[in-house]
Image 1: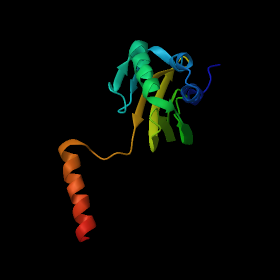
Image 2: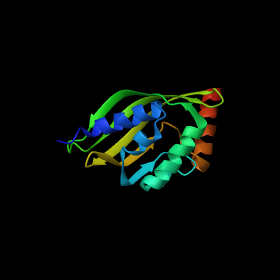
Image 3: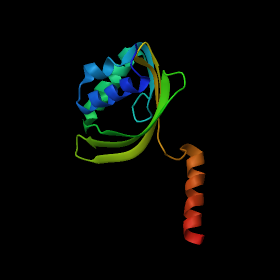
Image 4: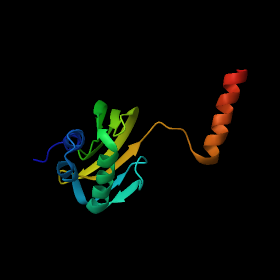
Length: 141
């Protein structure tokens, strides 16, 4: 029997916390798709691109930290979503703490799709207008 989809995701998080790139990489299928806006190339397709992303992450992050807050497994038993409290430390000692949600799919016990969502407002022109409106409300009520 294949392990629950969430188990492979937990294995990925523990491998990253241990800075074990090979175990982390082995959690992904050969054709996996990973999207994380924190990376220089947010869309990574296939193990080679995911490995390059992991290499970059390990080069800038001294310590990874992932604490699961909520886990929602899909009815299909191969997908789900997880809410994480993320607590990383950069190589320069700066702490990064933020909430994050990952939506995931697995196939044959491996992650085939993983997408990170962060609670950041819109960027670009939309972000500028939203920032102005928030400032206006703060100043004038």
